[in-house]
Image (tube, rainbow, N blue to C red; front, top):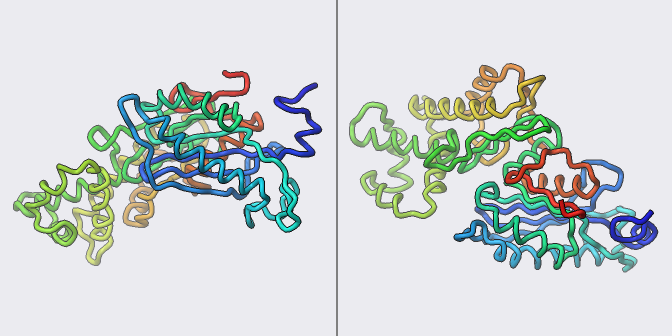
Length: 369
């Protein structure tokens, strides 16, 4: 019986199977090359990585597939060249399927599967879904491809391929959960329509409280007003600094750590502490909306927002306990890039258990399905 693309003897003797994971977001493009497990394990071990700080453009057709390929293909080929030269440092040292870098022996490296997680994939990924399968097969010989929303790769990085719920929070906020039969999503609607409890949401609430204090209205915070003036200058100038910016969500989120500092001060600023309690409630609401309803639910928190520490995490633990008494909070095992590698490895070994979805997780196999 023939193998998928080559005889078993040739594959075993000469070819090392690898997978490629890609994370595309607002800070740029990250790519990881890892050896695919051949024994059904979900752990791919260490990966060789590279990154670009240029975010993939978004145009009238959505996320620009050509711009993504212009960055991805040279990065992938460089990683493949290094792996083929047996020069992956301690990331592949001792691996019996990799040529000895000191002896100079090499083995050809091919990519068996690729998983790409991209911010905006669910709503802006039509160009990627239309163009990437053919382009990656032509350029890299890849016929197994997963195109995922970044929330899906965040999920896979945090929890792997098991049921549960993940809240990914930074500038924005989205919650995603699955019982492995379908996905449940909550929020992730952007700073104008949602992202409740996110960095942008917290920062905006803190700025509003500062402006209330400046005006002498109720609900204001003199402590937050002092931080606004230290960070941005005189309060009346804030609208002129903020409204023309194309990166308003990031600017709003940049003030969230100031809210946390005021909440953690001695004595704590009650307005800042109240903002973080409300944010914790929003995050817990999103987690409750996506957590599988039957049995114990594992909930993982991932993203830069949770680096705020106790000012946010203490009220969040209380809110999760109240809304999800059957849930257990667990640490995130890895980040979205690790999740993309995990999805690619599972796809390469026919072990992908996460539910396919037309927009959240689009899967193409060798049979073209």
